[in-house]
Image (cartoon, rainbow over all chains, first blue to last red; front, side, top):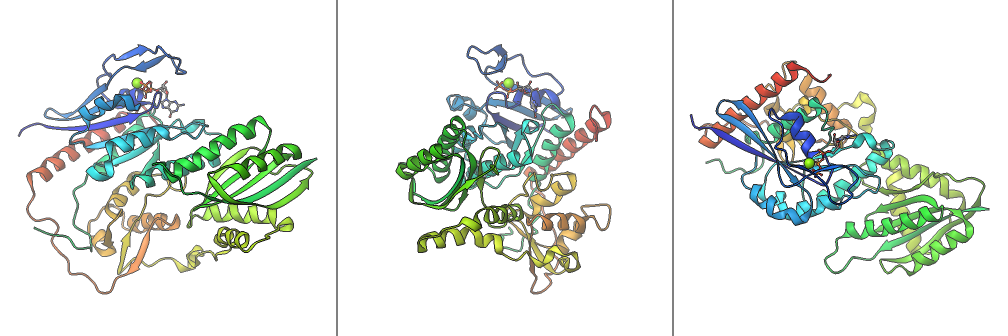
Length: 191
Length: 266
Ligand SMILES: Nc1nc2c(ncn2[C@@H]2O[C@H](COP(=O)(O)OP(=O)(O)OP(=O)(O)O)[C@@H](O)[C@H]2O)c(=O)[nH]1
Ligand SMILES: [Mg+2]
């Protein structure tokens, strides 16, 4: 049997938890692409370029994890990874400013509703929300952004530091990737 | 003396490639910064193109806000529907609420808002009445009869479908829901077919899961005209599907192993 290799792209703004997530679920630690950030972004380390992790599921089946910075100026990197994806994870960091601008930029570029790639929106740092009401509001605004790009995607709260939470994401992508069982009652061209 | 002022307005359709939501957030964001500086609290309620703002704060500050809003080119038909003196504020901060048609929590919220405003409410023009009623009619809608559990939904002989994913604050995605939701989202599936897949080891789990989805308004149930003859599920396995299957199995095995290894609770 020839090897199977699938790719999961993880895109998100600075500090969303991309590196952390890959670290949590990957066997090998992400390449050392961390560098001291030259601008004050509120944390000491930021990833320069792509984070990479690889899960060897069997000797010849693997899942590649690609962490991509969420700023538009990195869209060249996005294009390098954005082919035949197994999944696209949009990591959004909860913030009090209710800023979901980065996700709109990412969606604008990746256009997952058109390519049909399974998408999950992971809301990280949800533990920092003051209360449920604030969190709900943020989710509302996120939904607004998804609707705008005609994207039906599950939104889940995720703590990328937590193994169970991170594995749950993989499980969700797995479910989304199940071949259409043709249960549908609508017209289907069964060949 | 503190004041409470409520006003209605209508969003002007944005121009120049800007989206409706961007427009809303721009207005909200500017208001937030301004209100924070001027110790104004309240709420910014958005339903379709109607805005209902409630401001609480010092009288002179509110006057300034009203003036600014009046001049804001992004909104039109601005009118004040409540203007009262208050001894204490009901809000603790400046907040945004986006109202959806089918959300129970939103209906409750609007009920509270209506109670807060009703005594001093002045709906001067037909337009104001129209806008206010459009917003508050959501609030007065009878709760769906399914709320009392004597009328549990009937799944047998019905078609199931999901239009959107349940909100994470209403229902947490777990392994069980992950099995069902991807099959139902934007698809219409006969309950009997779903049952035939034997997704769960426990007999009643499928029903319990569907009920969970139903309870958060995520499930659409329509009676099926007649039972569909069972079609064989996927005859020839395409190579791509086979790869997909092997991959999926390997991944599940990996996840199970990781979980067994522990390292995290639950
Ligand atoms: N409180 C909290 N902290 C989190 C969560 N997820 C990640 N973090 C922490 O947030 C910090 C930033 O995470 P990173 O993984 O470095 O973020 P990144 O997306 O790689 O950021 P860049 O490389 O700068 O683009 C780390 O210290 C994480 O441990 C979360 O859900 N809650
Ligand atoms: Mg990083």
